[in-house]
Length: 481
Image 1: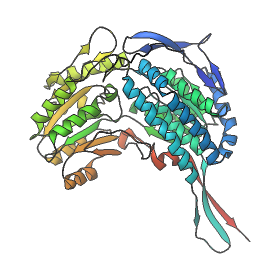
Image 2: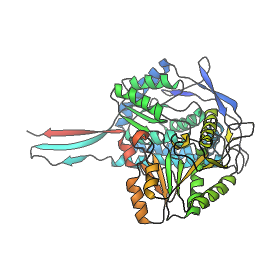
Image 3: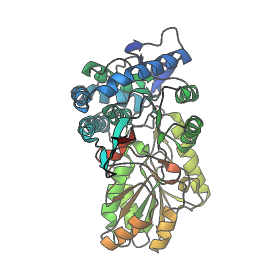
Image 4: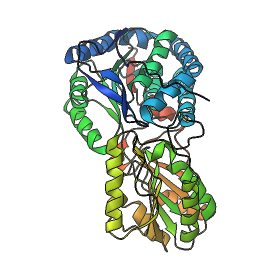
């Protein structure tokens, strides 16, 4: 397989118009595998944002007035186009993000399924009749909340936008969506599919630029009725503050630091192999990535040995090359963070079982790294690493393991391995997380909700809950006389 490194310039999309970087501020887009600039992404001005918000507000009544079936047919056409163009969308995502092409392609194909799923959910947006007195009809109806300001990070260039657009568009909402300046062309490819599928001008508006300026401007704009954000905890708190000032509801899917408990009654070889598979997806740059490995002392040596073997076997390189299983980190910031976290852990007494340093002299590659005997006060046990570094600690009591697992401010995903239903139930009841996977490290699915507790956010994406987030419930009380 030979894939082109050709890259098309990213564009803004406002009220049905595509706008390039000529005669306006822009910034470079880099290929993480080479650290070379491959294009420039245009920045939206305040005038552009006003136009985008006005377009979303103007398009909302007509889009919301379509039947669920009519909107669904358009979404199904968009899904068909995304799948038809999946190889090209995945190629572009790999160029911008660095993840291997196989992962990028699976992401496009999997995430496009949210469109057909929500097209069907929208047909079942039922209200209810509430028993009342004989002279009154009391009932509820569900309606789209209105134009949405959505913010999407770089780690899932196709999955991130589609999770928000699928549910919101199906519900009848319109969007001004700001995708990452680091992966802009993937978003452009997706929006072109919606445009070609017949989504009217103004229903989707795509912008890039200065994140603080864009977020403040969009959230404050009166036509915007809701904020949907995926990103880090610190940025999420700022977004939530802006939204609170104007009383706008939010979906906040923020960072995580997922514990993995390998219980005494688990199979340590299976646990290590499945954990390694999940850990190195997208080079560990996943908010639900398994990140803190809490292993029963009985299994510690076997788990570490198996995990190290799996990590050593990974083929690392440019994601567009054949057979590559792990690509570079997405930007140099992640490289600096990995070096700092590893150094801090070693200084505090951790042992290096594998890796620990940058790879090569081209691109932003970091070795798969395994640390053992990691002190609980090491930075990597407290901060979300967002990279291919694995801290492993041992425990003797399940109470201790649960205490370690719940010790951070995060509460997004969690994992456990056990062959006992009783142990699984105990862990399920005790872990402070919005997502729990037992005996696997699989990712999100469109038919079930995902979201966090504590500082990992609020609201849910996916499932019926993710659809309901884009609706309001109107109570109607109709007295006949």
